[in-house]
Length: 424
Image (cartoon, rainbow, N blue to C red; front, top):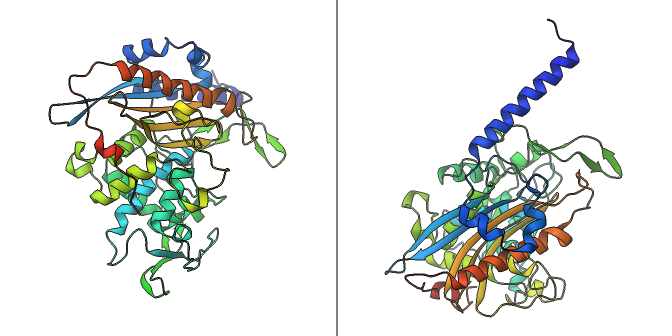
């Protein structure tokens, strides 16, 4: 029987949906019984847990057990984890870019360091310059170190753009694949640049304080954008452009992609490099790792970083777990949270390592959920503060309390995570 064209289209769509669902199900991790039962002890989490399709929650809880030599051993428990279920990583991509920028510095000639002034030129469409300047306040200088501080302390987008351009699109993605993160793809600035413009990155140069040029890097072009690891990706029921609502799903196919297992592993690589096989370790120094530890845990005010001395950036600004991004939240004594967060298009994520000197406990926690009840992308109407952030705060507190009393054969020596913050 010859089907009408419309019937053929519907049939093809159904086949695609079934195939996509089957593929997604085949890559979903099994839920941990421990994690499932623990989550259900908290009534505050019930609203999200009872609507898994709506909130698209994915969760990784990593237990850390030390042996007699204080060597950490990691056991992951997962809940609804599926690397092929897309979520927009937003600012989570700042962690791998920070790591790779520090690594690249070691390939440049001496005396270039993370404190060397960097200028950025413009050689094409969608490129903006940062000319050489040597302000008296060293915190305001354009350096790789300061860009990383801005990214980790308050999730600064312009700082990310400068390091994306310093690295180049090809370098970022080639190195991620070399390190084993084949499902990750970082191909965009945080700016309204199209695919071709994002393949092209600015010339950069490094200078002495007097303005003499130490090194020049020409503009770069990636010949081909890395293929989308998930194929076509659409989300929502509509999206907004200006004041107009477009009644069709939003296309994320060409967006950045960073699965929750990958960003969790990257944070672990930054904090526990010795736990990785040599081939998967970044080429960083002990001073690099100390620098990362410092700015992954510090809050804007505690950092004493000059640009964030005011009240705009409160101390829970990017600590969604435990504190829920509440301006009035007070630090928990003895607790340090080393983390990276993402918030965009209704997706809310936090990837963190908790070190608790009061109870001598430690663990990692990673979560992402989707809080966009009207289903419209880019309308700025999301339930971050009413559902997402309170949920993540309760989640962090639940695991903090559980880990505080969890039996351990050997208590961890957490001294490296409570070093005095003094790295320049």
